[in-house]
Image 1 (cartoon, rainbow, N blue to C red):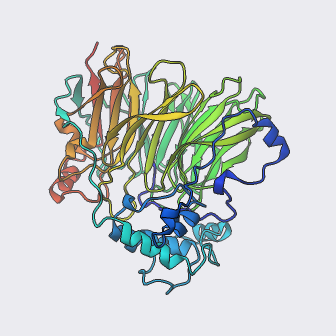
Image 2 (cartoon, helix red, strand yellow):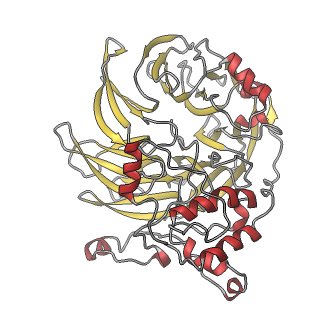
Image 3 (spheres, rainbow, N blue to C red):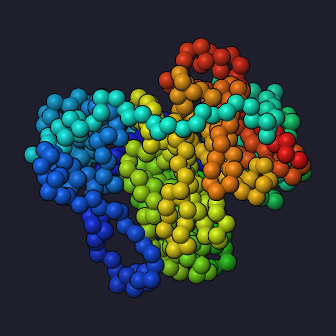
Length: 543
């Protein structure tokens, strides 16, 4: 699974030592020479105009806020969220003295264990001195609180989601956990197995295509991703699902003996900052498979690749020293024979970065798809949507656990088409509250890609059935949305697609999380707890 793993998100990332204004900064001559022909893009910097200068506080906000992220317009969040949560948290992160404004105290406390607090201190997350001029901060606060809407802006109009979903047969397996907290579902198409990771009991279960438990292994803290291999499986453990800066994540290996996974596990990587996803490739052309890890972290984290040292050890190379890395993928974007790396970042400078491989283990960063820091990036897939031979990007952004969840008009599923030069243009936006994952698959075998999407934060009052949406591609990137009544049987955190039953079409598995649900009608939450639905299998009926 790939997910944001941020039950409470940090809205901003302070930027000690970061210099991105106008894309300037010192670059070594060697790297500069190597990247001359690459289509590298730095953060887009919004210029301060004479009109901005006439609006009190806006010019200061534009100047200073962009040192950490794409400029966030005040209409992205409502006044209450800004005043009670975002701005107090930001003030403490930026080292603004208490009493500079009448904002309440930072509600996001530092109540973590001692190891996590030591990590925060070493990283300098909370600045001891002001990173923004103290005399400018009140005007920035006043600007946002005056310009922000009283209520969140409405989502764009869209056609109603159709009930029925005749493409699939809904099957509820007997597999249950008392309080479903499913952090991983993965289909092994070769065997017709379904891997299920659950954080409630720190287990990894192996199910057959009917949902019958073949094996269950305990003592694996919150499995979130798995690499299925002939002789062993590599399982990624996030360590702590809930926010923490204690680096407890691991990548472990379980050997396969006579078709079963054997215990105890073997550690491959340890001390990871809440990792959410891994990819594997020979990145430095030494004939050995390296590992790419998205370390989402919390207030501290980083995106890295781990060099295979051929002796069972790996050396970490940090590509992005910021928290928020979620999913990643390896692909040769510029067709130079070297594998590049794409990563989706869900904090601060949100969006999609490409790290172009320069050879010899060196990479050049390009900030390709840029979002403000409230977008809630949650998932990314690389796929050629329009069949032109250039890799496009499918994203879901709807992580809505930042404080008090509410509907955000910019949440949804997006398709960015590649123009052939690795410039990505938004071609599809389907508004979907709380969009958490989207998978591009030709489910109906008509030659174009459909999209299966889940929402972890749908509008339960108005559209609870949007927990799952099937976007049927009718050609020319036009989609019709479908769902089914049982979509409300749980709250879906994770999803996978694959041919479970071996009939030639792609099925879907949904994994449920119902523990500690927020903004859910009490009757619905009680039903979830009573029925304890952990999984749903959507059997494709095309063949």
